[in-house]
Image: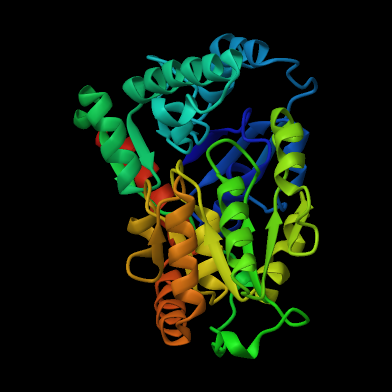
Length: 372
């Protein structure tokens, strides 16, 4: 069976990691794969049975990219038995394909309205239209959390009739570390602080500034805490972010963007992880922290409770008081930290790329067979 994959808008981040990993583990004995995209496909390891069709010109704008998808891409996809659209924006009534949902900012009005820029909000609204069109014309839809499936189907009830499946992303074994011994807070000091970690792009729906305020309060109460924030910065937040960090250099360590290959070690050096996002489809970063054996203070929004279950303590990331209280509770309770870190690590074992790859390509094959 020949499968063609539209990777024209899978250029970086979690989307490219997902594509690379499922292609690493796909069983190529019965499948031949062609991946269509730009030079970013060079980061995907070469395998016999996987052909990369790298486009000569990269798209100068979203409009040019979507023009190509409408008029150029169908000619390439029709040469395969089935197409797979992990970016979720290709739509056609003449090509048999499976679409995929990976970005909830496209669908959650409250979350995308956090962006002050009219053009940023407009972009997400346009992407919503593109994705809904893609889902409606698809033979099947892959969701990556039950939360996403239920939210999108409530908003667009006509999608309930489509063949669909929930397939969680996997986790690299590089992140795995058994939970550490949890120490009393009295065993830490200013020279040996307890290291808190938040890995995520600094953006409007990630709420790092509320976490900084909570840590400031705990420092004022005498707790020896040090917060490490890792992730690139949304350019429109640069001035505000600089103000947030004023006077905090001795206990807030902002690293900016870090190479993906270095992230696993950063998790392993931390003592406690905090995840304060209010908008996720499937929170890969949260699963990475689970696999690293860290006690986790987690946002109670979106799919986070679905993924973490009772393997963490929950807080409202919009409420500094709540973040402060829950974080203080964890600092004072090493037994609680031990319990939730062990549960989270156990749950993380369920998220594997081998499983994700098998379920993905089996679903694609099933959609082709159902048409016969």
